[in-house]
Length: 183
Image (tube, rainbow, N blue to C red; front, top):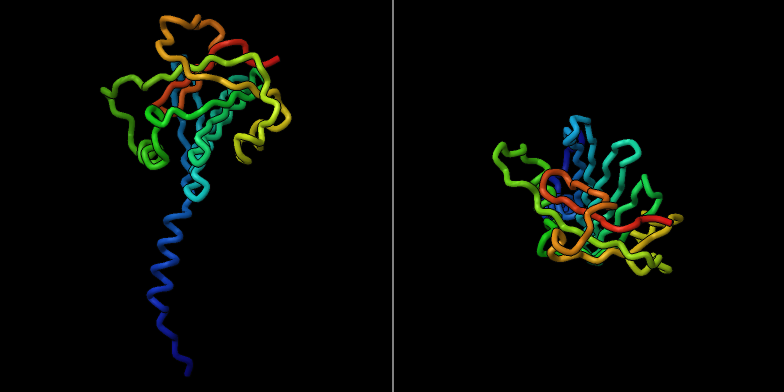
């Protein structure tokens, strides 16, 4: 009669820890837009590469974004303009991967304050070498014109808000990309 060996507990613990460290979180969220329409967003978090993919599916106003925490950049590919916008992450304003994961699992609070909004001015200069932003952003922006954006402080005072594209990241961060985006 065969006997079953007890698993090596050290190996079991190591594999469990690795499973947690390299875990990928996939979150699907259906939001009701301000206009009453449905907006479907997905969030995929890769803890190993320190990258979050956030996508919004909303017809012509759809967009896909990469938040590369390791390299400190984010990029958004806008379907309506057929262009990409890349900028540095404001680590003081953007939630960490852990905060992002936690906030997607919580129910919206009835009396929650409005989300923080960051405004970026998009330059008209095209990025010549998208590889400099890392392989994840390169993959997102490959084949489309890519522009750099700079965060604008005091946006309400200095930026004409016409021509802005709004990216609402779930219920905790609003991003406005202002300026002529695309060719």
